[in-house]
Length: 480
Image 1 (cartoon, rainbow, N blue to C red):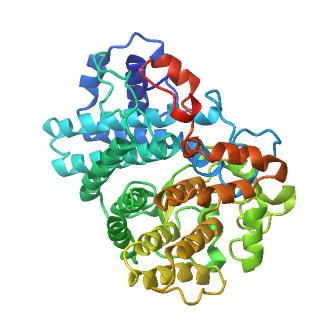
Image 2 (cartoon, rainbow, N blue to C red; image 1 turned 180 degrees about the horizontal axis):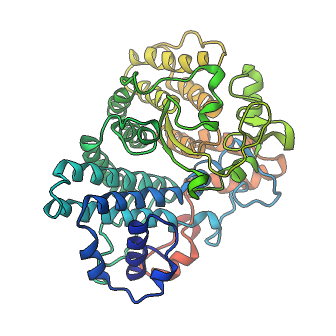
Image 3 (cartoon, rainbow, N blue to C red; image 1 turned 120 degrees about the vertical axis):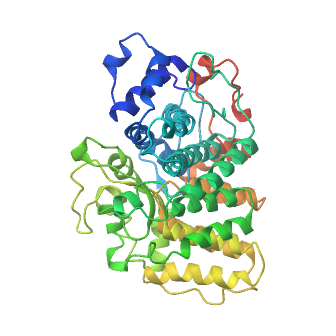
């Protein structure tokens, strides 16, 4: 069921999930919808506001599969275990499951309800202040912006839905809008959200698992990089790095615990799961079912990276399968439950994004960029790179940054987006082409190159189901 198009059912479903906080509402859907009555009765108290924003985070849990697939599986760090894998071969049409966007738009719908309705609650519940309302709305804005950021990087042009599904009068049969329009809205949402979000929420599970100023600034850093707004990216990243009391690199010996134990000191925002609460995901099978590409394996071997390599990012058994999200310890003990957190942002990610921004500002800033890179390398127990200074060309820095991001952030849903961003910003298609093509089996390289040589193919096709439901949608240009 298309949650963007069928607004009556969407509203009913969203309100059921928001009120109950559960993932199923079959009996509710069996009833005749009474939209206006339901909406008027619900948003009256502080408890309603908390239930509503909890429903948005619940929807975020349902998006992690898409976020990981979109950001990782097309790139050069994974070796496909299937000879005819269309993702590995870049062979897409509008029937591929990877093009499904139902879950992200479900989140957007719920966030829109929060953004629209929560500001009305202080008039009914005097214990729920305007400041309380602004904070929860800020969370909704952050989560909506995050979701659109994944969508725009994956599809480039998508429908921009900003209205809550309040009645049948709301038109969700909307056409795509330009990527600039999407990015403008993302920026506006985040700038507004950052003002009302807290710095710290006390408990780690809250501080690392809900939107904060640090999370908003990490996302803003990423967004600004995509738009070549390097000064703004540097400013946003500095706000994160300056909060050293909240965000700090874990010790080398504890690097794997970032994934096995959740919510480490370097975590900025991660999607929370707890199997005891019935909150599970498929990250363990998605990650563990993929083999490390020779490209990535070679990097770990060349650097003798013992902190992030064997039995950390991958293990030898099963054909060098990824161990992040799969393992419980570095001694080959498997995770017993399907509830690893999905890390959206952590400190090394922001440090490397800041380095990427700084090298584009002026030569003096390149010194700090080098220091950031070397700090991450030293934590990994590998030698610092000497002579990274104002005389180092941008293309050399880009090469190093991509290498460090590969070793630090592999299987965290970053790599494809990194390649697209830097290749686009530098107007150098070979940054993506050479890495992806050379990571494929020799027999597959020609056909992979033939598809990716057109940058329009760097974005996914719109699903056939979405096209049939919404006649105002047009297929992305490469796939027409």
